[in-house]
Amino acid sequence: MRRRSDPRRLRSVLAALALAAALLSAPAQAGSDAPSPERQRELLHLLRQDCGSCHGYHLKGGLGPPLLPGTLAGKDVDALAAIILDGVPGTPMPPWRFEVSPAEARWLAGRLLAGLDAAEEARR
Ligand code: HEC
Image (cartoon, rainbow, N blue to C red; front, side, top):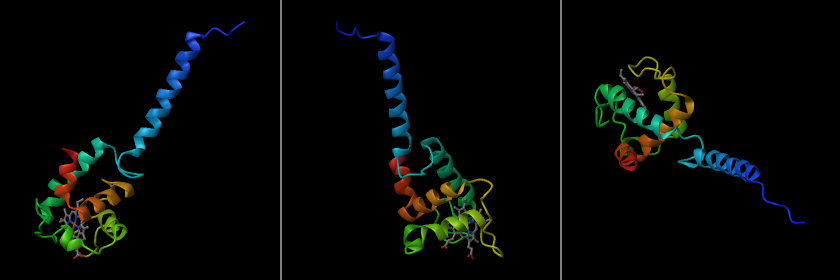
């Protein structure tokens, strides 16, 4: 006798496949610990509004130095992330640890090194 296919079994197999697909696709977006697309938008907004108040809306400098790929070239992404997290004592550069996680600071530093305009362009 042949085994009849059981629709309930098929449904649970499909549910498991859908779950696996969701788990696999989520972190595959832009590097291993990249923030979610929603959080990326928030972080880019923070960069313009909060960081921009010192570094300039276009990050060309103001009270703080420019944060452009040209001026940051050759700097280490982890060193820049550490500055974002802990600030620079004795200067107006404040720590942002209460606002951004270490992974998010690293993501921001990477975006700055690549050029914020390019990062925002890619999100449109
Ligand atoms: C209150 C003003 C102020 C704000 C707000 C501010 N910064 Fe700064 N930032 C500075 C100053 C001043 C320096 C230079 C410190 C020094 O003399 O080394 C600096 C330095 C830096 C550097 C190092 C640049 C380099 O060439 O090494 C990075 C990266 C940086 N800031 C990122 C950020 C980010 C990202 C934010 C927002 C999350 C931010 N800053 C917000 C004032 C500010």
